[in-house]
Image 1 (cartoon, one colour):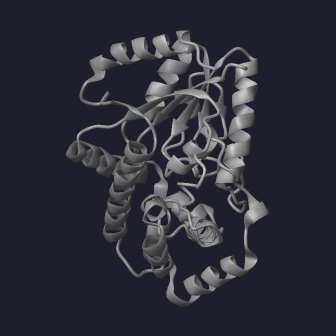
Image 2 (cartoon, one colour; image 1 turned 90 degrees about the vertical axis):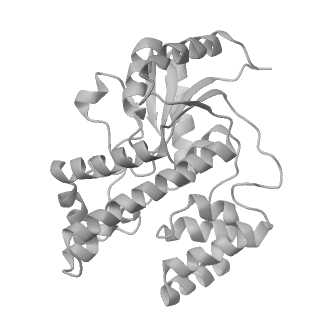
Image 3 (cartoon, one colour; image 1 turned 135 degrees about the vertical axis):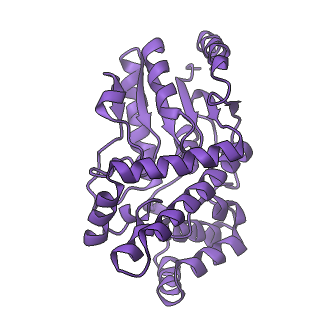
Amino acid sequence: MNKLKKVLVIVGPTAVGKTALSIKLAKSLNGEIISGDSMQVYKHLNIGTAKVTEEERAGIVHHLIDCRELTETYSVADFQKEGRQAIDTITAKGKLPIVVGGTGLYIQALLYDFELGAKDESTEIREKYQQLAETYGNQRLWEVLKEKDELAAETIHFNNQKKVIRALEVFDKTGHSILAPKEKPERLYDYYLIGLETDRAHLYDRINARVDLMLHQGLLEEAELLYKNQPQQSIQGIGYKEFFPYFAGEETLEQVTEQVKQNSRRYAKRQLTWFRNRMKTSWWDLVQAPETILELEKEIVAWLESSEG
């Protein structure tokens, strides 16, 4: 039996230091980085997605960043396919693939043999839920998902209509959550999953400060670009659509900024819940205990030296 490829994965909510850790480990472990974020694939969305800058990359090769135009769609099936191709490419070079991101479903779909894609979609079911959303709004559509599949609802933002409808399709056709298929999916890689976290109050303070910094860096200009063009999928990211009432003259900048912070905090909570409940994760607080990185590095080296097939 062939040995499983090694894949290092770094997950966690925004503002806990995933980018800095990934660069440090890529340098010391001869790695290349694969973005596991559903929004960083879009060109021009740099600030609101906390996309790694050229300076931060420090010469480390990054994959699945800036690979879609704002008008293009990007699905979990796309990420699953392209992420696995990137893992093969990096491994073939003799380097270590390091997946970094907070989109839980993307990470799980990459590492396990989840069956995804268009082959089992139902036009009739999809159109039914699209009509419901048009009539009653995305919030009501999400509430229907929560009634049927609370597990999926906890991880999908209510404004992400495409993902909500996809989850409802799968549940209606199979009777099982899109996140918990009837047959237990097989693990495809020998992965080590690092989860970064910190004290909840401290995390929320960091998220609030990050939003303020993003505004200073030009977040409003990115949001206005989406407001003017209204691409279907890329506007769904937290930190963009919240500004639309401001551009429409309906709310103040202070009001919409507070909404961005609130939605970001809620999303961080959902991210932590996902990884705690769905995947075996090694948790570390490098924000308040930076010295523990030495212990973390020892564990990673031990995992790399171990053999699993």
